[in-house]
Length: 395
Image 1 (spheres, rainbow, N blue to C red):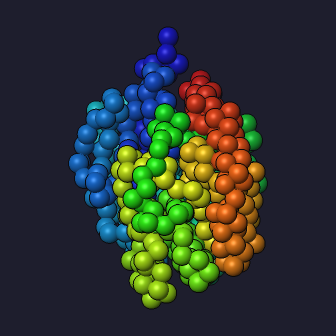
Image 2 (cartoon, rainbow, N blue to C red; image 1 turned 90 degrees about the horizontal axis):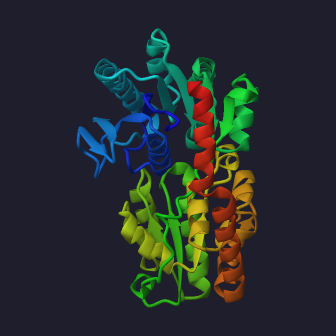
């Protein structure tokens, strides 16, 4: 008998649509494959505009959302609209088919309000902790004002409401226990392990190198805290010394246009291709062409304690990595990466060039990363932890 037969789990995500959010989509499919009926509430975004659709037996309800927020006022409007739709759709789904668990995936730390309404009907709340929002607010706005204090309060209320919590790494588990006052037995680490079925290693396509010898790739969100401005400065340093390295930047976000303008004003736009958000097929073609992959995340406390999905995706494709020296970045990549001194773009650029000039080093680092993902960090391994966690939740 399947472990979760007869159980209905509602997953609520606010910052990304499904199935675009790879972590949540993997979680949803794992729960479904173990017998659960899974419904998802998420926003409409570019490429994901249907109000309702069922994919692989998982029901997805999407709601409208204001344009991507910029500034405190923009976030307040976005969160208010999202909360309204989450409550409305949760009631609609519950009336159609009662659910036993709500899994809320932050940011923001507001989904507990939806869960509180359904606690009256003995619905359990699982907090899937993706971002540490007080630190995220500091990274974006660099101030501890009244909104920062509100972030701290909302995080505390989220942990207080949660019956169980999923942490994406050891640092987040410690936050749940120390700052959130949760019982350690109620907190389980389930990393965002990549699926090796999706991340296929294949031959690259030379056209993405634009006639240059090497390609350096970045994939991820392009926001204030992701450090793309630091990467642009690295490109400038490299361009002054040599002309054989091309860069591919994949992803979208609130800072994309600003970063494009910065590349032009810095005079490096001819050495960078901005691909925006692309489908998996094109993503794999570009990343497989890359000789090196980078994570220029700005050294903030948020980034220091967070696990970045891109790191493990690079490793799954046997790519050597350059990133700044951050705690959880080291935990994930270990010997698959070089670690530049925090905020030292000169050191970052030198490490990219060192890897470009050492093919054996690239091969060894790539092989180490691939075997680490395959044997320790892939979703095949992490999904077992999720199933065991949910057995405890639903017992």
